[in-house]
Amino acid sequence: MTTAAASSATASTPINLFGLDREQLRARFAEMGEKPYRADQIMQWIYRRGKDSFDDMSNISKELRVRLAQHFVIRTPELVTEQVSADGTRKWVLRLDGGNAIETVYIPEENRATLCISSQVGCAMDCSFCSTAQQGLNRNMTTAEIIAQVWFAARTLGGDFQNERVISNIVFMGMGEPLANYAAVLSAIRILLDDFGFGLSKRRVTVSTSGLVPFMDRLREDVDTALAVSLHAPNDALRDELVPINRKYPIAELLAACRRYTAEKDRKAHIVYEYVMLDGVNDRPEHARELARLLGGMAGKVNLIPFNPFPGAPYRRSTPEAIAAFAKILRERKVFATTRKTRGDDIDAACGQLVGRVESKQKNRLRGIPVVAR
Ligand code: SAH
Image 1 (tube, rainbow, N blue to C red):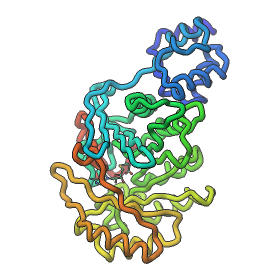
Image 2 (cartoon, helix red, strand yellow; image 1 turned 120 degrees about the vertical axis):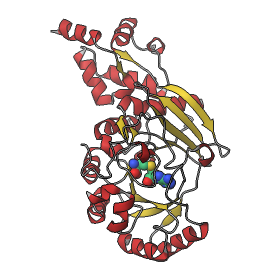
Image 3 (cartoon, helix red, strand yellow; image 1 turned 180 degrees about the vertical axis):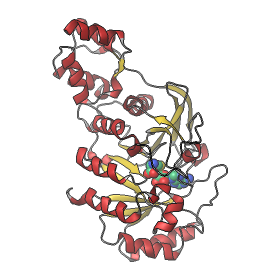
Image 4 (cartoon, helix red, strand yellow; image 1 turned 90 degrees about the vertical axis):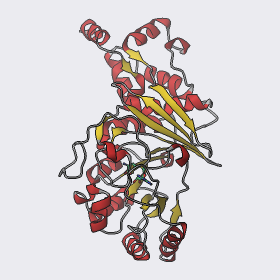
């Protein structure tokens, strides 16, 4: 039996190690007749020490290294382009298997540095103000492709994987709806949080969702991580237009899921409600008052995002005055509000500007389609 299993594994394509969380890697090793702690060692070599060659793994026997090389690879996507913004933001276009490309953005700030990663090639959510939506969904990314973005960025930025953190925060705010690619994203989060993986703390990994309620509940049960919710409107009529998934999971259901999400967590747990500021559409004082009523008493804060334009976009960015007035109304009503600083817009790296290179599948969009693919 062992021989049959081994030979079939050898015959198939090698598995990219970036795609396996600790439990999955241990299970593979068990199948190969190797000790589970070997999985821990391998992960440390990859994520803590930044190695992508089995030959460098000096506490692994020569024999096992040869076996590993038969079964596994450690492979990052190929770099297509790198752009550096005047503000230090970097955008990488990475080519995936199958000819598509996705984008990853690095945003250094004074006391933290955030990597914004993609989880799907394109997106099916069809939000009217987002350029990724214009492409439709081509396919889900694998865990390996999601994690390889982080490893690639860490290596490219040249920091020591173990000590000097060049990346302090990860946000799933690149291309795609992370919760529509649940299983792959879950394993990726586990690798990000694992002590033998990237070892990030739970508050420094944020999943951003347009509001896939059932998967928000599953996420709460499966892993402890920060959540951002793309709200963008204070009532269903407007949100139906901007974020079409609202027709399936309207605001009342979404906020109920948000309450469940923070209910059993510690006091510090809160949700960030993202709210894109569209001139004359959702940025009026009455919208702010309605939003304050909606969120009053919720464990969360509002992050106002000045709209980032893209070719053919049907919106304009709100004026700074309108954004300031909106934030003031929220704060007067005890709803904590911040305004997201626009970063990297000179290289189209800002929120909602990521397009990668997606082979068009225009039909795979939510608008006009009653349900999301599960
Ligand atoms: N699918 C996830 C991640 C999307 S990107 C989600 O919907 O949350 C992260 C944030 O950028 C979301 O809040 C998204 O709504 C916002 N965004 C999208 N397009 C934008 C644009 N053109 N200008 C500003 N923010 C935008």
